Image 1: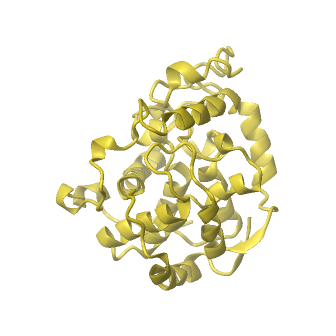
Image 2: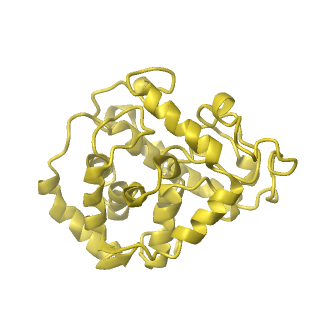
Length: 286
């Protein structure tokens, strides 16, 4: 995939007065301390942090990366999210398909000239449909983190939910770099299994033409300990550093466009179908 040179850090062009519309103050998002959804969210993360081991992730790569589970169009995949409510999300309790269009529309407002970016906003969570095919949500949703090395402090619920993970006290897997070499690059790091990595594998398998910046957004948008927690820089190379501003820019729309004001999906569908036809057309392997 080609890397597009789009100039300096794109977030420099982002101004508070132009932030995506939301009915909540920004400080109210990602509240992992209390709230009406807290028990559901905490339980999802406890299961994730108990069972997401290096061996588990390797098994999931073998199971899903061959894209042999289904054949469908991208729009059909998006529509399938009508059936899914993300159990790890403390901010919303409505089907994920609405969040897809909210994110895409927020990006279109601020980046009208980058249609590939808008499409990434629409499809970034499509990999969550693994949950509709039998995967437990703790292996599909939520923040991601590297396996095979130390679990860093900025991981959500780090102090309370990893106690039963067998990798926690492994003499190799509990070290700073673990099985990896310093600055090996995130493309060489195994992340906890979830919708980010799955959709990235689908895009690569189907030879979709979204540029590398967009693929990074898809693959690492849930990697909050990196793009928001400032951890794991010891594993990053120069490419990761250059891509980080784009992942951060995407995150603003992924997070702050969440609102109970749901979009008119039917009116938006023709436009986004045209983007799908441009970058990931036809029936795809999943």
